[in-house]
Image 1 (cartoon, rainbow, N blue to C red):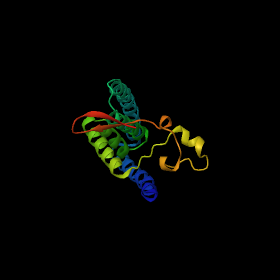
Image 2 (image 1 turned 90 degrees about the horizontal axis):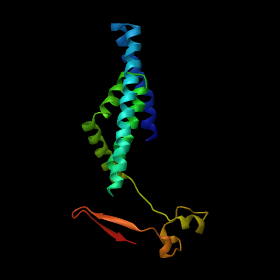
Image 3 (image 1 turned 45 degrees about the vertical axis):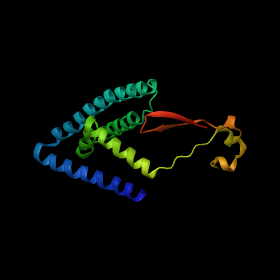
Image 4 (image 1 turned 180 degrees about the vertical axis):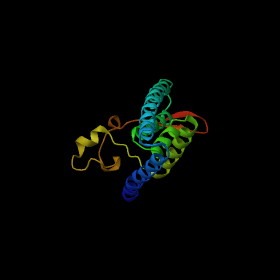
Length: 168
């Protein structure tokens, strides 16, 4: 993973420079700089507007009692789009603008959520576990003596029925 990220951090700026040099050949230095500056400002303002909407959608989902996982994923992608848009270059700008298109962003969000469901491991720990075993804060419940009052309740959603059930 670190190797891929390192390669990406080297290759993308080199491609950006090559593309900017090619555009400079055809339109000149000032228009090339203008394109980079205008896309940065336009992209940042669009990302800011959509970020505000994403935050409102997260709050609405929470008020409705829904887990706002899709809304949070889209908010993160809007943030990434903003970062890409303020980075000078046309490849990053194009990627950033694509992430600001709701249909494209939703598809990317769903793909990321599917990847995380497949590859991520989630562990829950009570606050009492930090006090019980300071030398090993990441132990599981089976390794730590806790009372039922110290264990968090877990709510499980049955996707076929859309109902919540309590498991404690």
